[in-house]
Structure formats: structure tokens, C-alpha cells
Length: 142
Image (tube, rainbow, N blue to C red; front, top):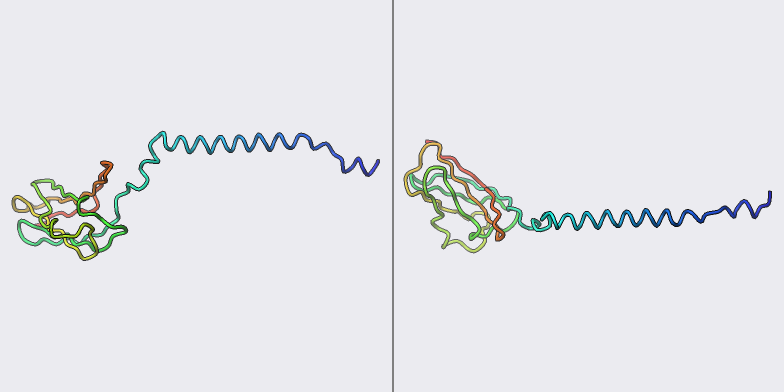
């Protein structure tokens, strides 16, 4: 057996196999990226509700205070609304607050009527794209 035959093995079939594997990998990655945007998952990036911690305290029979303790990102006051399970409520001091809430800022939430036992108040954040999320809740207990 010649020494030259030992090192001259036929390697012609290796290159096409590697090429096919690379083409399949590129196709799978491309399909995943296109599929993400077609299904609308790409448009939800950046529209996540802020993470915030509020301390609730009942002021009197017609108002409650929600004080921002901490927040992962800035919260715009124009993006906040309140809802209630039993009566109409609103943020009464929105105009006296700055555009962005910071730790220690207090929202005064007033009810049209006195609070009822078990009445729930939700602080709701809404994005520009129409998504909304409850970021904090409070229940009145007599």
C-alpha cells in the first residue's frame, strides 16, 4: 500500500452536505423572523405595562390616595385612568402633577358617592396602541 493513497481519500461529498445544512438553517431562521412579524408578535415589543408599587390609603368617605412607592419605568399621568366596581371615580389632582409620576407622587381618587364596603378601585394604564393593563388595585373595607 502506497503512502500517497492513504492521505488522498475522496472528500468530494463533504462540501455539498455542509452547504445543504447551512441552507436549511438560514431558511428556518428566516421563517421564524417573518412568522413573528406576520403573527403580530413584533408589534407588541415596547408596549408592556409599567411595573409599579402603590400604597393606598383612604382619605375620607369620598376619596382615596394612591402613592407611588416605586416604578420600573416612568409612568405618564396621561396614560392612567381609574375604574370602580360600584360608582364613578376619577383622578382629581391630575392637573397638579407633572407629566411623569415619580416615587412619592400621590394620586387622589375621588368617588361620586361615598365608598361602599367591598368596592374595588383599579388603576389602569393604557398604551398609545390601545392596550391596557391594571397596574394596581384597592378594595374598600368598612
